[in-house]
Figure 1 (spheres, rainbow, N blue to C red):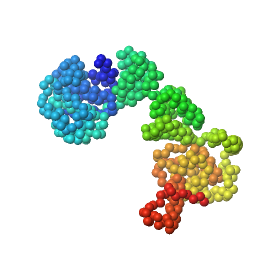
Figure 2: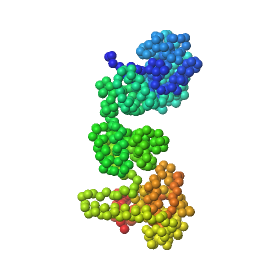
Figure 3: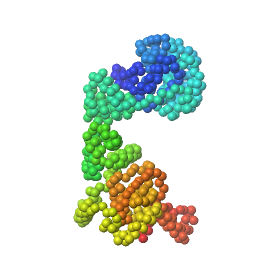
Figure 4: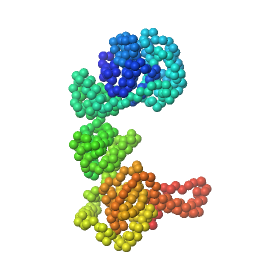
Length: 545
């Protein structure tokens, strides 16, 4: 078979040809130059980053016949280098631990350790995927690793270093390989395409390098597939079709509609995406990537993408973080959803549901009921008029300037504010006229104190700060309830007693009372005692007063 895949055809033969891993290569070259060689090495890292390749090059350097001592770079011309490269060197034994896991295989391998090499400087054992060995095999290897003969080197490679026993790790020099940066993968792909004389475009290179996810071998495998798919050349449209990805502009349009709370526009944008027959999981990953770019630009101001800059200016950073969390949560549960398209649609619906309430947000009414439509229009007009009046009014300094304060509260404002404590705050909070989203956010905040016309609340460390729009609605509702405009300070720390927990305690108390009342019923009590049953909490319906 004359054809070779790119990963094998251009496999590095010297340390200088290895992509990345400079920290590992420098350590090996220095140890060879100063003759400070450890007799057992273990290379760890994810798939396709060069573990086995570096181990083979190191084996060639140790047995290279160019000089009397090991060479920092193998010559790839002597008999030892050529035979190790071909995999037929007598003193270089490469073992796949995944297929030889038994203790008998390990004992057979170690029988030849005591014999000195005949045709080389050292006897070298390369054990690939060493974590697959059985416990008995590790025990058999343990003593030899602790006191190996001077003519023996052990090189081991693994993708799961945590599965290797600590007794083995303590006897080896551990070399942890990093993932390859995307720009290095891209540069290497360009180098190979130039050698092969294959035409390409910049977008195709970026798509393949990004999809490699830090693995140089995965990148070259994708490159082979893309070349075959594009009939000997790389075109962005063909590469996108192969990878199941789409142009970022479709995602930008979708996020723009979500940011504008335009459900109809978001639905149409999502339809455009689904008509391209792409993988829905890839679409979700691109959404996460774009949100990540927007968030980074909001902090660092370093993006050159005009669309990312525009979205970073119009979307609140906290909303971006909320959408990012929604997308990540949807991705983590993507594979358990029976319909991938529905999983993507639900993710977008959640983003729309958790948009901040703006002044233009008005509930939508179904068009098939004309009476409700007319009521909606009239209420919308009233809302607009009210807001115009609010803008014209100066901000009140005391309760007497607020026309919307209930009369029954006007004489009690000072006493209510003076006596404001944890219990009274929880009661006041439940009477505030808040939207569902604002109520849900601030119900998780604990009352700390009220001094100098400033309300201090405390949130847990894992909750994000509310946006200015949410704070404004919250403070306006308090002003209406207490008859006085106040300031708000939000701290972070351990939260115990919040309106949400207070409400849960009341609900639990009511539930217990209803359960006790049921158990006092003779019939119910007799059934429970006779059949050893119990009352399920969810089955007790709340009685409306």
